[in-house]
Structure formats: C-alpha cells, structure tokens
Image 1 (cartoon, rainbow, N blue to C red):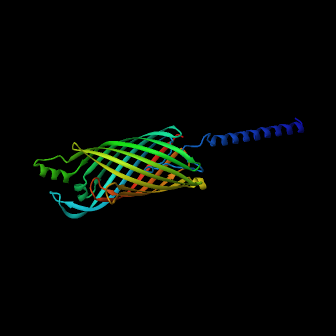
Image 2: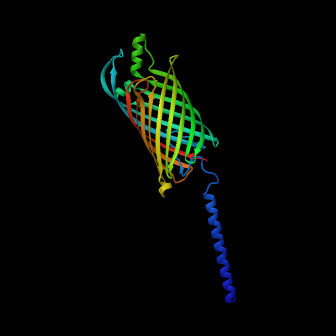
Image 3: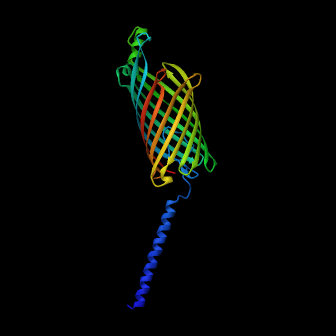
Length: 321
C-alpha cells in the first residue's frame, strides 16, 4: 500500500468517526428535549408535587406517602359526671398511609383517586384514658380543571370528596355512658363522615428555579354518630414557595416551604394552622422522592383541646407526563 493510499484510508476512517459522533450527539440532544412541555412546567420552572399542598396541574401520576406524628396538649381531665377536675398533658402518637393516583385526561382536566388509612392513640395515662385508640379509613375522588393565564401563571379549580368510617375506643366516654344509662356500654364508637372541599389554586413561576402556590378552600363535613348527624364548615388559606437548585445549578435538590390556616365558620377563633418544609430529589423530572416535615396545631376531634404536633412524611411519586 502506497503512502498516498494509506493517507486516504486514514482520512476516510476519521471522517466516518467524526460523522458518527456528531450524529449520535444530535440524537442524544433530541431525546433529552421533550416534544411537548411537561404538564407541571410553567414558564422557566418545573413544579415538584407535595402532599398537603394543592396545585392546579393535571399531570398523570401514582404516589405513596407514609407519615408519623407525635403531639402533646394541655387540657382538663374530667370526673365521671363530665366535670373538669384537673389539668394534664396529653401525649399522642399517630401513623398514616396514603395512596394516590391521578389521570390527566386533557391538558386542562384530570381525575384522581385517594385511599387514606390512619391511626392515633394516647401514649401516656391521660392520653390513653381521654383520647383512647382511634382509626379511620378514607376514600376520596377528585377532579382538577386548570387553565394557563400567562406564560408564568396558571389557575385551577380543584374539587375533592372524601368519605369513610372512623372507629374510636374511649374508656372515659364508655364509663360516663354506662353511668348515665345504668348499664354497661361498649367503649367502641363508630362514626361516618363525608367532606366536600372545593379549592381555587394559583401557581406562579417567579423566575427560573422559583415558584409559588396560593390556595383558598372551603370544607364542609357531615359526621354521622349514633343515628344523628352534625356538620362543620371551615375556610382554609395556604401559601407555599419552592426552589429547585437543579434549575439554578447542578444540585438535584428541591426545597419547599408552606403555611396554611383554617378558620371554623361561626366561631371566633382559629381551628388549625400548619407550617411545613420539604426536601425533594429532583434529578429526574418524572420521579419525586422527598421528606416533608411539619408543625401542626389543631383541636383534638370535636374537643376544644388543641394539640401541637410534629410530623414527618416520606413520599414517593412517579409522574407519567
């Protein structure tokens, strides 16, 4: 083989390698850029989902969340006639498990289904006697209608309907009923509740990597107890802000802060408030793995004993679009 022929072969091989490299790189770029924007993207920011923070997005997903909370309250103890006799500290522990699935039927419409199981119990003597052991199961169906107002604003109407039974085992209540009825009464109380919650939700992309959510809700609940019913009404307001460090640099970490307050209609004082912070892995747009830490102050059931609690919720969610 002559020197000229060898030179031509080398240049031919180099040209083929260069062409193959360029073609492969272009193909990789095409694969990384989605043909259509993800449904949770708004302007220059991709919102990450959080349990307990409503949003106007219609993406399809499946999710699982597990939470543990511990709380305490200072409240009166009662004698067998229901008269307060002392002040004690109630200690409470709870566990909850939530499964959620949502189907984005269209860009503006989604349907979802939730199943929630929860149990809480007193962990000290006043808590065991006064609170007992309580468990509940809730099924929920909901829908979201979302509309783009501008490149960085999206408004949604969200409606959820939840229903299910609750079972409570209360030693103190059973003793009171036994005395009043003149016969031994079971310490088990069964109730059934239905709650309808419409929400207006606004998402705002502040700038690249930063987003905010604002929610206003009205909740109406009907509780069936011993063949009787009672209802409650509450107005809730929520604000949340989030930052994705991956969009600002290279760290796949999302940080979210939120605060919400609920007010019972017809009462002069608040009924609950919640403050939370969440940490989430954002390395893959379709996968959300995170931990939500929260502080909550709310009444214990129908009693005006306000419990302060700290919770941790581990969530795993996969979004399809």
